[in-house]
Image (tube, rainbow, N blue to C red; front, side):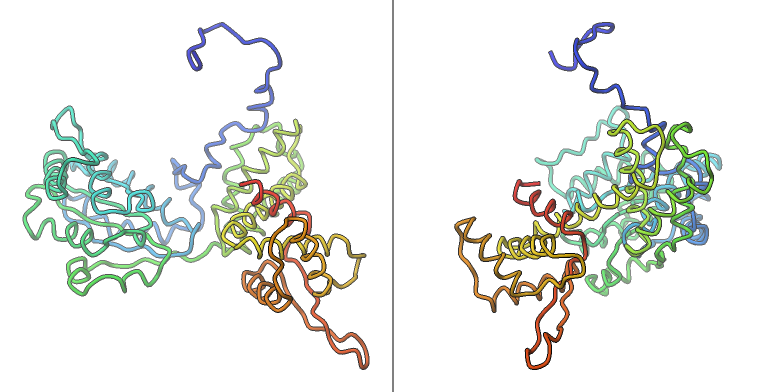
Length: 418
């Protein structure tokens, strides 16, 4: 039976896991979901941690913490800081004789009001102690709320519910209204409850009614994007994710690895998740190759893979005709001589060949021109009007944002279903 092999019994043949572990010493440090044990790895967020701690600090004294909304672009440390401080809040509270329960709920995965209550209840409840359960069906929402209040009252002096991706809630007014009024409506008798909302959408509050905003009376924190130096230091603080032997012995060569990934992430709106993900993919590429030492070449290939993955995601949202147009631009670019302009009429000729080969409808030049404009709006290509010479009019020259090889691999991935 798979997964039940007896200890000491090894299957024969090639050991396909032989290279695993040769590069990484702690790959979890390069996982987005990993929360650092120490703030030594939390770079450039000292002010934000202090501000959030100030908002939640009264919990350590057994008092109600402020409700807080945290805004900022993806990958700027909002979730990490909230989780880190949530863990520290529990520890500091315990040292002060105050029991604090923190429930982190990802609203991307738990978007309905019932799912939020069930997930929070699962995290703060101990069914062996309470005989309370939080089934996903068969129990009314009001009864589930009653069970949540009972769990908080039985185990904790203070509770904090962190709602990440709060803008994904199906019914934010109902959910936030009920949570924010738990004390006022005497649903909770022994526990003080605070709510932390996290969102990339600065205008999320516009969805809330005046009554809900009044009951929340939340304060707001804004996390700015990381700059390139902060991204560099974020990556450098995770160098022990790798085995020491695979890191370049030359300090400048090692810094070049971190700097290359940081530069890319800085262009992606200061997204630390992107930077950390690139560093992980760098190690994975080196591991697959059986490399002895990480190099900037591994980083550059990881960057190419990241661009390809991003392009695949974008292309998957486009109609098939736009995919054919994109493929036509890439093939025409690939066929062109160095420095030669890729002209729109040549792209259309290639497009006609592709649609004929695929035995599908061939759109008019005017419609293909519209699709080129739409693709330009997505920043995957650029178009420039150029003169063809005296008395010869003008033409469109098309430039890809990525290499034709990257675009063609992305188109192939979309065609193959990923």
